[in-house]
Length: 459
Image (tube, rainbow, N blue to C red; front, side, top):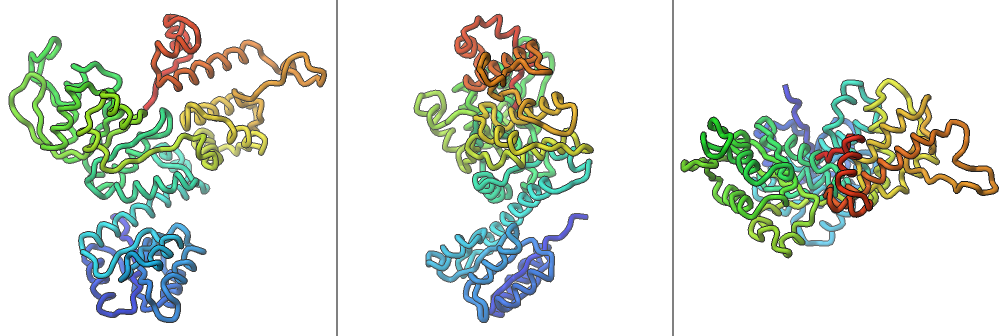
């Protein structure tokens, strides 16, 4: 049975407090009450809470002071502030002090319940991050690939945005460079949505031709094209009632963009080769490694479709812009890959990881950690185990050269070549022609190298 969420309601106005308590109780929440700031602080310390609803104007200890005290000991506990003056300095002060959100009195019941759900979802996301940073069981580590990791301010803002977006029905557009974790964000939104028990279908819009992608999305009738030997439902029909992720949506042709726009506006479509109109109820999450506003200005993406998709816009910053997340990510990967072994990453190695530019973002970091664990024979990852460590110049007088004990020329050259190819692929968004030009090699040789190193674009 699912655990009930526990909420503390703090308000000195008895009628207001009673109404809120009754409303939350009817929604299935477990509720505690407090009449002033002093009682609120005692309740927070006495009961395991998931959310606090706090009035600003309170006797004994005012709401702002109580909020600051709560955040000192319970930084991850979401607090929603009640105020009769939503635009006042006190409301702004409350947000600065760490309030998740504030509500004007009197408030609409639907709005109130929506904000409560968002705050609880945000608290769950912070709990996931905290769980990953602590010592967890092997089973938890094995399932941790679906969870978000990050302690930077930018990551926290994304978690908060996910918390607000997930319980709604709004379309979400996720934008970020390759390897930043767009699919993980989509997974988190779906996992915390009201459709979490319904189908979650993912489609790679960049890996298929126009005809195949149209059939994949909307299905086809028997005989619609060569190879269509039977009727087939598309991904939108399979996702009916649930959620669909359209990855690399920027790769859609204008004709497909038009059909997608119709689904967003009217929730209807026809299968390829069919005449019957089908209706679906699907929440759409779109992801792209391009700036769709630039694509729209260049005439490659429909303006009306962009505005339909861009209801909630989540921009994932590249890893180089949030280096404070790297130690937590490293710890996460070490625990997941070597759950029973304690691996130490010295300060010198960690500093190198935090100052590297990471063109491949989080995905590249994971690959580097995997390689380092293969290279090390013990429980210590030194700077020599990192593939991008800058080697000292040959022939200097310090004696600190590449030609030291254990040096392997073949391994060194192979690793360097692979890393250069990966970096070039990431810079060109995995465009093989542009990558070959950047590396000054022909496409045939590039394909051969990609096959040899098993380089595939991951979503």
